[in-house]
Amino acid sequence: MSELPSWEDMVSGANCPMCTELPDVNQFNYKVADLSVSRLLLEREQTYPGYCVLMFKERHVTGLEQLTDEEYTAFMSDLRQAAKAITAAVNPDHMNYATLGNIIPHLHYHIIPRTENDPRWRGPVWTTTPKEMVRMELEDDEYRALVERIKREL
Ligand SMILES: [Zn+2]
Image 1 (cartoon, rainbow, N blue to C red):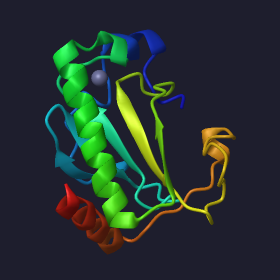
Image 2: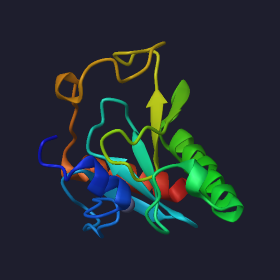
Image 3: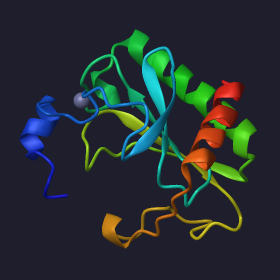
Image 4: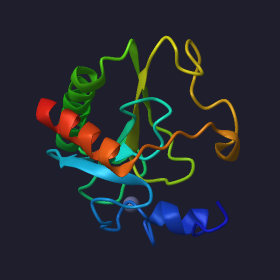
């Protein structure tokens, strides 16, 4: 991750990649939809089918503690809406929610559908360094089909 700006810069929002308007399809993800205060993104990494990130989009904040009451309520509502849509689209056995921000300190939630036959069932998905993670990528048409399935359920 040496290509990232310094931690101090990223916390302050300078050069924050999540504050930069990226194309709807880019090297990291596919845009699913804009919700009330957030953007739902389907990650290219699909070891866990339906894996999405919900990014707070109103301004640069690093954590929940920086949100106003109204923003928090709206963000949590978006999170539930997204999780329900993903559940309807991919029918997982369980759902994991994680907000860490250790690599990009801009408030976002990982929404990770889990299944009984996934490689880390009954454990957390992150047990190794990012470089050592199993990575599963799909074809472009498969990403687009998955985006449409999730979008229909929103
Ligand atoms: Zn940001």
